[in-house]
Image (cartoon, rainbow, N blue to C red):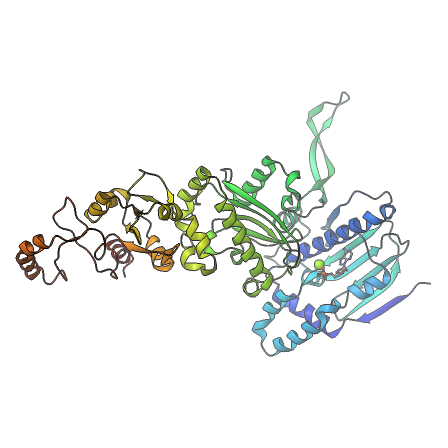
Length: 563
Ligand code: ADP
Ligand code: MG
């Protein structure tokens, strides 16, 4: 028997549709992303089912998503040969909100009613999904035939509060959604234009794992009797073209991705022509499920310290693009990392504000940071040093910013020292070769190695064989302040206060006391005290700070920043 039923949308759906239409009018093109994502999900589901029931596929085994614009009729059709829906499934899935979400949604809706500003935020928490079609369409028709069924169903609505469901004819398995587009706004996009569609697919759905195809007209030379192109005559032919690259290489197995593909993908997402320094490809299952393909560039990007940086971490959910440069997935001290994170359980329309509070995103971030720090710790010496030379000064800020990982980051620090000409050493190495009586880690900060190596403050230490870390990055001042100690050894500035090495010759002190007094009185406004130095060997005098004073380098940095 055939039945045609007219239903009213549930109140929540009506409200949801209004909100979607009114809050997303500035991004109307996302409807296409949503329809393609549904089509891709439907194919995923069918493929999954076919593992147990291979017959279900029949002869229709070439999965694809077809986009078909018709400028004359002002329609746009998106079809798939996925799992399709039965009559009851259409009734259940289209026109109601997924069971689990309903209660939460209704609640949030009530809260939002009192505050209109919350609406766009609210949208982010619930997938806009299928209903986003009504942003651009005055009528939406869905025709679907479930895998294994010989009956098709048509669902139709003008988004005015009601919809109809009836049985229909459809030759092939899967779902077609046909949008009757509203009149294009004067300055708006025309969603029947080949170029508009190409661009939207490329931007939002490039890594969908199935081909998204469209018939395009091409002008080609006519072939002559011998099959050679005749340059004088051309004809217009229609060819099916795949619009997306489908290279969801993060979703593939490591063993299935070639070095070349990895590098190609890196330049695609980073717009960096140099090959990457290193990469991390992860697939995690369990409570926090995600896959990630991250890269460390070879060079620090020139725009690194600009505020509006591009091409950071791209966030996807089930191969559907959510956003570019998702800063919530990476702390600033690892802000140079590029790549893709795909979190299947993440809502497609989650907004930036909501991401920050999203527990899943926080877990992924914690996990990624741990993995990256472990990768750096395990890197072979030369490779690590080439990384450190480029990014070390950025990484160091993690000492102050990331309390939980402070020790891990501390073990990644490298410094040049007064010994072992020009070599980087770790704090662990430093501690392991401290002098037997040495209790603290000596360091000195300054503008560059030459200045530091020639500093009179280091004379005694060098003479007596103590090693001193030479710190030349402004951020080192904060590293010392926040790190306090390493392997229970505190830090001691070689520049400030007395050093606990060697004794002051008491006789010398007596002889020069009068002289010190004289210098002190003439420099009273400038210096606090004049006394014998534990620092000097060759030089006659040097300026020193109190142990808790700022270092000369820090004073200089602060002055340069107008502080
Ligand atoms: P979501 O995709 O987040 O579940 P949507 O509003 O996009 O929400 O879609 C609602 C439901 O409609 C889907 O969960 C699915 O069951 C069904 N559906 C939508 N499009 C298709 C399609 N092309 N093929 C099969 N089922 C579909
Ligand atoms: Mg969807």
